[in-house]
Amino acid sequence: MTQAIEPQRRSAANQLRHLQERQQAHAARGPKGVAAAWYDRARSLAAKQEKQGNEDAWNDLAAALQNWCSRWDQGDAP
Image (cartoon, rainbow, N blue to C red; front, side):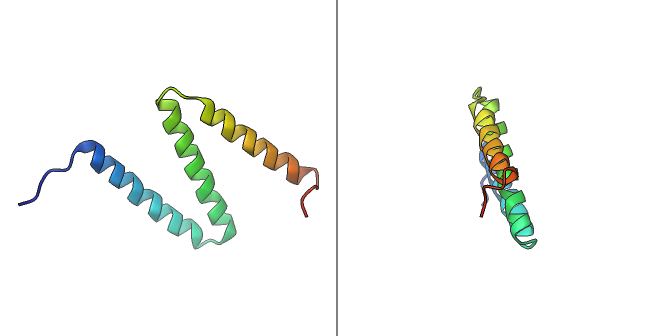
């Protein structure tokens, strides 16, 4: 006999499966794909935090991206 899965657990399992599939597809593209996978994950987590009433995640993500861009735009990178 199979038991019904709670909607929240099913949704979480589906999200995890989708994330893993996307990460594998991105990884196949090499470093560009890996960077895209991390960006997708960061946006997903920030959106999740926003739904929970916490917009600090978006601010933190924006600050991290601004820092990265200014570092590479200024030629400070090796």
